[in-house]
Amino acid sequence: MSKIKVKQVRSKINCPEDQKRTLAALGLRKLGQVVEHDNTPAIVGMVKKVQHLVSVEEIN
Image 1 (cartoon, rainbow, N blue to C red):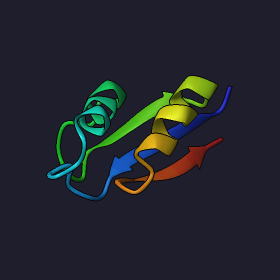
Image 2 (image 1 turned 90 degrees about the vertical axis):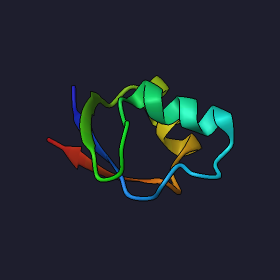
Image 3 (image 1 turned 60 degrees about the horizontal axis):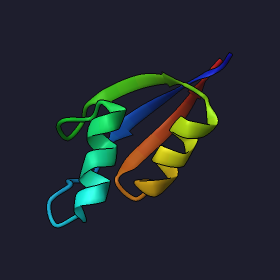
Image 4 (image 1 turned 180 degrees about the vertical axis):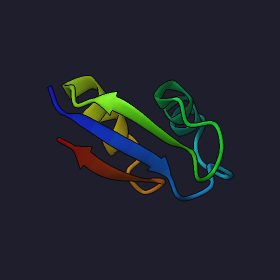
């Protein structure tokens, strides 16, 4: 299964509470932090919800 790298590139200040909780569920606690996740539909949906705050890179 492929993996994706998710990096928080914008601040969560002034974001709705549900987007803050989504970032926390992805494991992103602070700006510039990078986490790796399996490329599953659930994770992709979470990333789409906060796509304006993160950058995504696919890992083979």
